[in-house]
Image 1 (cartoon, rainbow, N blue to C red):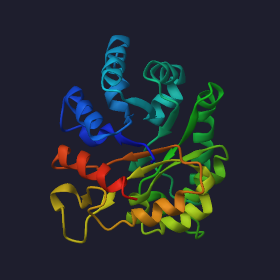
Image 2: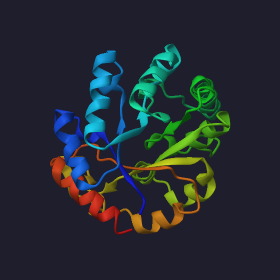
Image 3: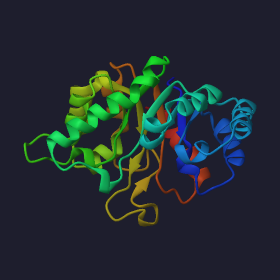
Image 4: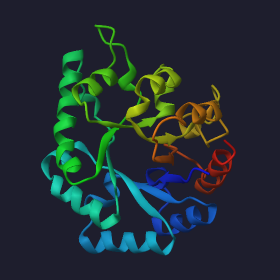
Length: 253
């Protein structure tokens, strides 16, 4: 059975994390994924406390999100955080709207920028990649997409594929898996509610309780070396429900 992780960003509104980790452990999750705001400003004592809390609950943190600013300005800080928490794969998660290029050349250059930002991470023996949202799948003037240009500019970039955001971007996740499956080292497992439902949760759903074909997607992903599957929900209204229902559904695929 594939071991499942949980993106702690999903629990940001249900603090403290020390109360969330036991729920994840009891539900059967093997790991968690960190995100920038929870550790980037933490001192060494805070990071050690988080690591002790993970250990106490039998959880690891093999993957983590780190903002591009920190990756570019202080890669040694990133590596220090990763070493303390046991992070083996670093993913850059987002680009603010006012920083996004508008044409193919700009996105290619952004891919080159990510390639450069990832070099110290790769040189230290960690994996490095990009985590998508929906904006990477808009069609550019030359008929390419930002995601294609990012990969072209960053030949060594791995991909943490957020399948539900691919769908929200109007693209076919199966086609992207077929084309770029060898890049996929991690997958965000999240679901999309039926049209008009879960408006208080921004239209997202617990895994297995939405419209995304996760059974088919898991079959499509099987040939590739996906190391980490990570449950995420951007705005859950009930964290306990998300935790329990999502792993139950995932374990049936």
